[in-house]
Amino acid sequence: MIYDGRSEARSGPMRNSEIRMTTQLTRHMTESDFLQTAEGFLLAHEAAHNLMLSLAAGIARGAMRFDAASYMATVEQGGRVVAAAMRTPPYGLVLSIMPPEAVAPIAADVSAVYPDLPSAHGPSVVSRAFAEEWQRITGRRHQRALAQRIYQLDQVTPVSGVPGELRRATLADRDVALAWSQRFYEETAGTQDPGSDERALGMLGGQADRALYLWHDGRPVSMAGYNGPTPNGMRISYVYTPPELRGRGYASAATAAVSQLLLDAGRRFCFLYTDRSNPTSNRIYQRIGYRPVLDGDEYVFEPRSS
Image 1 (tube, helix red, strand yellow):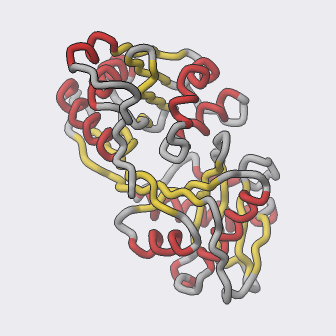
Image 2: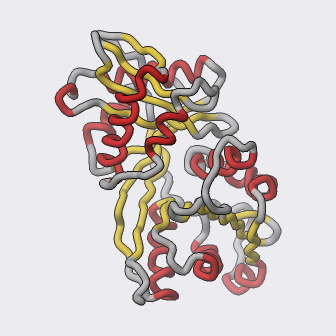
């Protein structure tokens, strides 16, 4: 069963008037403070919140840098965190699982900081509610740009019969890594990403929390990488095979092998994102042990009128 993104009740029923009286938004100035407040809540659904967890922790320990300070907020009801939101400019807002009544205070606070917010993404129910609230308070219409699904793997189903072997990419593979990472982003997001080259090169440096691997069958034929560690998991990313080499099992073999490496290294599980409109990739990942846990959407907002 795929989780729909609504926050779970933690106590007995509460009337709407009581909920409104006890809802409090806090904006956090540092990633460490944000994690101290929100980490327990986020870890209750670690797969759903893997992006926010890895961003906040990466910035806090100096492993990630952005041009501007992050926006981080939590919403509490009766002293319990029930929602979180984060933005690392120039990228859009990331939303957690949350109850409906937490959406409005987050939208109001974000609009005071980022009137030109380009997009927001999170669990499908939540991101849609935020987009509607954003249009209500700003007048800026919204459009769904991405329909994603988050998967989690706890045990790999091995792939057999695929020629080739996995090897870690190095700086000698720079040209392949840069070309394929940009094509990966263009296919998944429908646009170019100015930060793609920097991230791809960062995965070639031998760090423990990120790496890029190539499936080699006489030459590089596919790639799969990982980054974005959370306390118990790691996000698989940059899974790409050139169109002329697809249908031969290379991506399945590479993803399964990289996932197994992470489990063998002590990770309890791996995460990855798929495009819900792509039945082929969704089917491939499920065959190697990935199970769907949450649907998420990204909404983009029209520019402000001058």
